[in-house]
Image 1: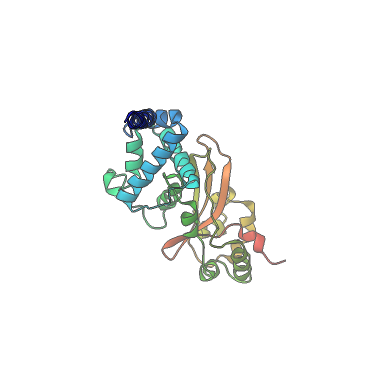
Image 2 (image 1 turned 120 degrees about the horizontal axis):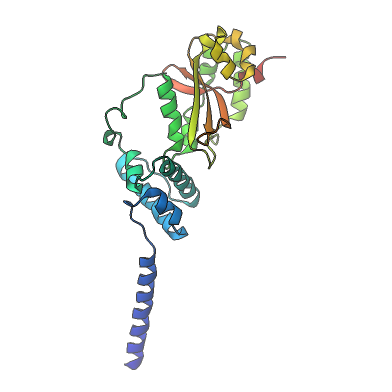
Length: 257
C-alpha cells in the first residue's frame, strides 16, 4: 500500500512539474506583435507558428504543412509585417491576411487588371504571413505560347529554349529575411520600344530587344528591399498577358549571336 501511495505521489509530482513547465510557456495573440515575437522562446515560436497556420487554414483556406522550414518562413514574414505596423497585435496582423472581407472597402478594392496597383498587390503577397514562395512563383512561370506572343523570332524561340531549361516544379524566388518593402517600376512594351524616359529605369539589356516586342502590354521590373534602401533583390520582365502576370527575365541574354 505504501508503495502504491508513494508511486501515486511520484506521478502527481511529475504531473505537477510538467503542468508548471507548460504554464511557463505560452502567448496571447492579442498582445503587441513585435514584443511578442521579440520575447518568444523557441517553444513559444512553435506555438505562434502553429496557431497562425491554424487560423489561416480556418479563415482563408490557406492550408500548409506545419514543419520547421515553413515555421521559419512564416515567423519571418510575420516579423516584417509587425515591424511595419507598430502596436498591432498578432491577431490583428494574421486576421488582416485572412479574409479580404474583413478589410476596409478602400483597402479591399480590386485593382484594375494589368495595372501597377495589381502588380504591386501580387508581389506584396510574398510578404504575407505564411507566404508560399514556390506556389507564388510557379503561378508566374510562362508557357511557350506566351513567350512567343511577346517576342518575335528569332528571340522568341531562343528565349523559350533558355527559360524552359531553367524553370521547373522547384523554381521559386522571394525576398531575403531582411527585406520588408517593394520597389516597382511600371511601363508598357510600347513605352520601352518608343524609348521613353522609363526605359532608363529598366536594365540596359532591354535596349537590345526593343525591336522584338510584338504586342503592347504592361511590363514591370521590381526589387525586394529593406525599407529605405534602393538596393535589393532585383527582377525584371514581369509581363501582363491574356489576363495574367508572367515573368520572362533578362530576354537580352537569349539574343542570337
